[in-house]
Image 1 (cartoon, rainbow, N blue to C red):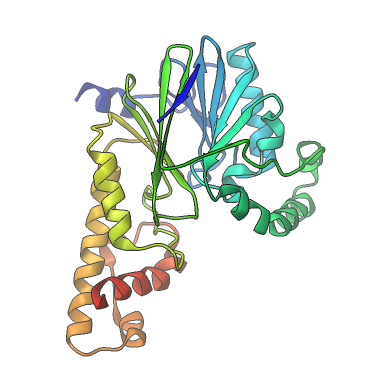
Image 2 (cartoon, helix red, strand yellow):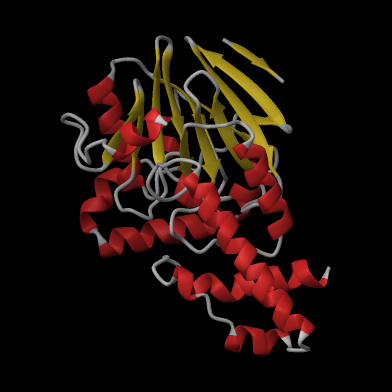
Length: 299
């Protein structure tokens, strides 16, 4: 262990929804690599087996999902979860850390701990609401505590475990305060964070910029991945990048045209339509997407 600085398309699309006896929410990506999500737009939990233990990428939308992921791990191997790597610090990706740590060591980019501390009260309230809505979640919520990252890296990090190499790459201003893309170079599998989504309007916060996001997509595309796993949505190929780039290109073009016509931001929000993406989830985020495009075209 060391710390330091298209046939696959057809195969991926042909994968059955059910992976052996692991249930309908688990998808085998490659040998020893599995992705689990309770619902199509929930955050993905990934399980990577090595001959020295398990690496998790994110830990679930809710503690119920995290408990289910632990059940999957136990079906797959008797080895412990050695590491949890976070693509972002938001609680729909980190709330289940307590299920795996200890013994797992949690890794995230610098800034993740501070973000999680600020959100702690909101996470507790979210857990209480889940318990009120789903009383059978009580067992999954037993013993909940916030687990902060044990390791916060800067910019890049490489983790070698067993015969697998995990390259961690910081992506700036794409979604949260501490976004990490994870690249398995031998397997050519890339975890692309919530910098991209699958048929999903992006959640663009004030710190996020469209130019930075497009630069991150180009950086990830340059790795030439065979499989791309977004923060939310089904695993796929670089078509995920194509769809996001097309969305941003049209958004920037249309906002730019309306701005040059002298229309105000409020007018743009009232008039702009994107019918090409009517089947995407998260339409309520479209106004914040226009805000980001307005900032980009106005400089």
